[in-house]
Image 1 (cartoon, rainbow, N blue to C red):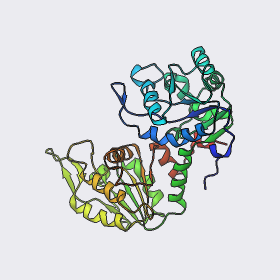
Image 2: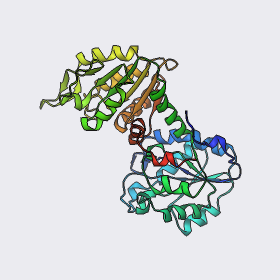
Image 3: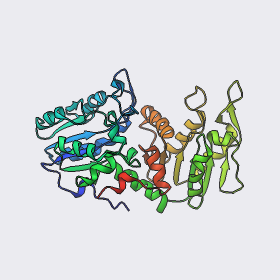
Image 4: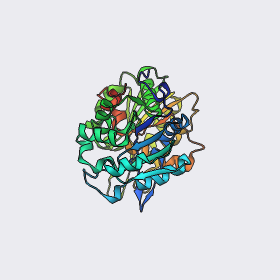
Amino acid sequence: MFTKTTIKDVQLENKNILIRTDFNVPIKDGQVQSDFRLQAAIPTLKYILSKSPNRLVIISHLGRPDGKIDPALSLAPVAIALSKLLNQPVKFIPETVGQEVKTEIEAMPKGSVALLENLRFSPDEEGNSLDFAKQIVEDTDSELFVQDGFAVIHRAHASTSKIPTLLPTVSGLLIEKEIRNLQKVLESPAHPVTFIIGGAKISDKKPLIDRFLPLADHIIVVGKIAADGFSSDNPKIYVAEDFREDTSGNKLDIGDLSLAKILPLIAESQTIIWNGTAGKTEEPGFDLSSRKIAEAIGLKNPDTTQSVILGGDTAGYVEKLLEKHSNSLHFTLVSTGGGASLEFLLGLPLPGLDAIN
């Protein structure tokens, strides 16, 4: 059960609202290349705006500028893309704190939206500075803080753990959706449950395998950890046994024999959790098995199947498939949080979630 206060539980009308989102999106030549994370935030933003707030100020980070200003990582292109999705102007303010922020915020008409510059242009964001958090709150004259950046709630940063100490803090709809689906996987999944896990390092994945052994009916190991020789005598665990190789003999995808055993397990499952692609999907010709697995999951009846896609690489791969096949493939949750979702499943602390009222 999701026990945090959400935007649906509080008064939003005439409030000055500050919201932390995760708009860490790919940008090339000044254009947003994938709006998946923007789309994920739209239900929260539209709900807030439907309740007639005085104004809505959005904060986010982009990339890893290491506390320095990097024009290539400016959020200016995000404001343009977000304006189109919201169907209303989003004022971009090229600072995070300071007099320009104050002046622009004070001039905002009622019901308008602004996006501040990249939080991580200041070292104080990742430094978890209380003074930085105070300045953001004061310069935006905010009265309520909405945390909806699921992908960063496992970080103890100024915008995740310090701002909530200064303002009443509630959850947005995205965080609620993510947590509810992850809780269901852990607490009340429909069986059979199949957990598909790939990736490069078994040391990173073994805690997840151990976590799901008591919960899952099947655990399927694919990707590099299978190619590197992971083995188990547990009857619940199936490890891919054949591979597609490049001309140098590198095992870059699982093979047809493995797929022939994996796809029927997916077909019979009512709950499927997938973390880690089956092959090196960025290499031409070696995404075949990942595509077959994604299609097998996405074509199942969404009314009778819970499908959860986790991890940055896997979610990113599925996002690209959905751009081409959004009408035919359906997933319960393609998580926006790589590390955050995995740490939640492992029962690790999430400072940004803990800070919500």
